Amino acid sequence: MTRIFLTHNRAALRHYYGDRAFQLLTALGDVRFHDSDTETTRDDVARQARDCDILVSFRVPAIDAELMQALPNLAAVCRVAVDIRNIDLDCANRLGILVTRATPGFGPSVAEWIIGVMISMARHIDAAATAYRAGREPVPLMGRELRGATLGIIGYGTIGQYLARLASGFGMNVLVNDPYAVVDSESGVQPRSLEDLLAQADFVACLAPATAETANLINLSRFQLMRRSAYFINASRAELVNEHDVLQALDEGLIAGCALDVGSSKDQMPPLRLASHPKVLATPHVGGLTPQASEHQAMDSVRQVQALIAGRLPEPSVNAAHASRARDRFGLALPQA
Image (cartoon, rainbow, N blue to C red; front, side, top):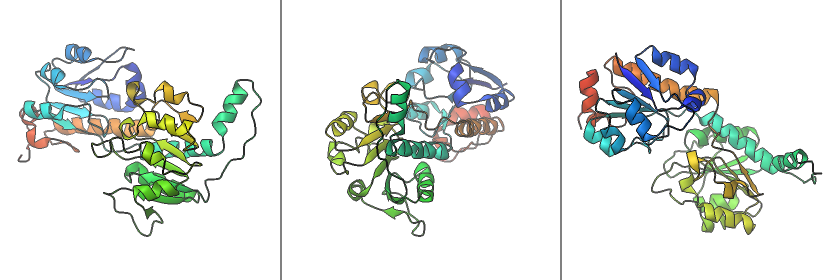
């Protein structure tokens, strides 16, 4: 029987995997997980999954070289996300371990979160609700409509494209910057340089992937290009934005406000020094936390395990040409390196 270990603890299993996918997975083999309320550590996985064939990987702990070397039977790591930066791919290649990733299933969820924070910031909803909740008399402030405003989207992938359609439905003008995307000329979306987008947008949504090319993409010099009445939103990764420069831009009035669902704190959350700023609307990395989004990626891992057990190469596989241990364990036909 195939031995499968999920690196999720109880809360992560409940929120980010779900009962339906878990029950389907248990029908495929001997399934275990980190049955604890504490966050899973490398030592937990090394101890509890030592004889396992497949790891179904949450974002913690990192599946690094030390951990993979401690699991002599490990043949495949199925990451329940698109982002595989927590997996040492070079080590997986050397050991012949197959790595798979999930397909994007969080586009609608994150895009709707962005629409929500744009409305909240534009109409001062969070500030008014906070004042009322604290027993203070709020000051009525003039807001703005999304209709007729300009949204700049940095990164025109799954989330960006869905967001553009939503924004267009609100009557917004949509600008995008993505050097690798092809923009449909009939969509009404207008491609722009990053500098032009920042200068023209009333709202800027950062959705580019985290790569060496995009590291520190948004910094003080970029905030200085924005309108003082504009709002900045980061729903991608902390690495794209210089957090110190965000604080400076807010304190100096370079931008009107900021919404964050990601940051450099634990579990990709915004740090408290930013989240507590009066011009920041921060949430604890919940943009993609909906049943539909979580189940989409969990079901990808179920299908990948099903394929492996049936001797088929699952998709999307990241390093199939190097997966000799997975080939031997499951009888896979691998492409040439």
